[in-house]
Structure formats: C-alpha cells, structure tokens
Amino acid sequence: MQVTVTGRNIEMTEALKKYAEEKVQKVKKYLHASIDAHIILAVEKFRQKAEVTINANGVKIHGEEVTEDMYSSIDKVMDKIERQVRKHKEKIWALKSKQHERDVNIKMNVIAKESLEESADSPHRIIKTQNFPYKPMSVEEAAMQMDLLGYEFLVFRNSTNEKVNVIYKRKDGNFGLIEPEQ
Image 1 (tube, rainbow, N blue to C red):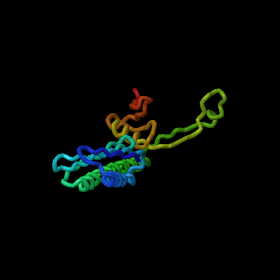
Image 2 (image 1 turned 90 degrees about the horizontal axis):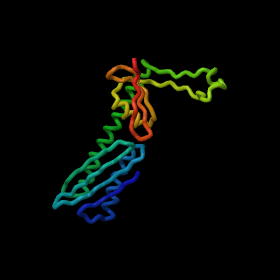
Image 3 (image 1 turned 135 degrees about the vertical axis):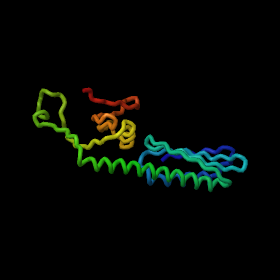
Image 4 (image 1 turned 30 degrees about the vertical axis):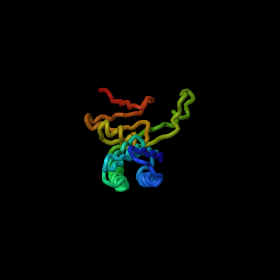
C-alpha cells in the first residue's frame, strides 16, 4: 500500500502524518489489490479538513470531513471511507453469489476433442478445457465485473437483448464488445 500525505496551510508534524497513515492502513483488510492512497490535510481558519482518495484496482473511493480538530477529521473521514469500502465489497460478493446461483441453470462448455489436440496439421493446440457460467447483465456491469476479477475477457448474456456477448480488454486499456449477428 502506497500512502502519500499532503498538508495545506498546516505544519505537518511527524505524529500527525503517522496517525493519518495508520488510519488509512486499516482499509487494507477489505481491499486485497494494489492500493494507492492520497491524504490531504488542510486548515482554513478554524476548519480542519481531512480528504482521502483511495485507488484500488480501478476503484476510486473518496471522502472528506471538516471539524475543529484535525485528528477528529481524520477519524471521521476514515469511518466514511471504511463504510464505502465495505459497501463496495458487499456488492462484489452479491454479484459473485448471483453468478454462482445461475451457474446451475446456464453453462457454456468449451470442449476440446482429442483428435484436434493430436492433429499435426494444426499449429494451435487446445491444452485446457474450462466450464464457466454466464449470466444476464448489462454491458457496464460486465465491464465492472471483468475489471474487478482481473479477467482479460468475460462471456455474459446481455440483459438488454438476451444475446450472448463477450467483453474484452484492449491493449490500449479500453474495452471491446463482441455481439452476435443474426
């Protein structure tokens, strides 16, 4: 986890910096991806503002709080961030459990025949066969699911047209969508 602390109109003491970093480290138990956190501590007259932005595997979580005490602002903003992270994690688990429930109903099988594997005419061989479920979801939901799981592609049933689609990650970082024609 990489944490940066920035101060605006405040004398940044080592104790304050360490306190903020320790508080942010607590979200590590919810996020198991690479995490970058940026903390901005600012003073404006009597207002003590703590602002935290966390980027974890493409997910951006942001919160800010203002009180009369900087330590209190840090505590409150981290409570807010922790709630957001937990809520995000619960959504991911809900998506996974829905996918698991539909696994029984719909399966796409990738079947490799031994004759194809042993064929000397073909330069490509199928060395692995994998079964995986696909479920109805929107294109945006499929992109989020694919990104969160770290997949290069995802097969899903498009909830708008009920057709099987494939979404994939392009080399430029964007997504591509394959839709069947009829």
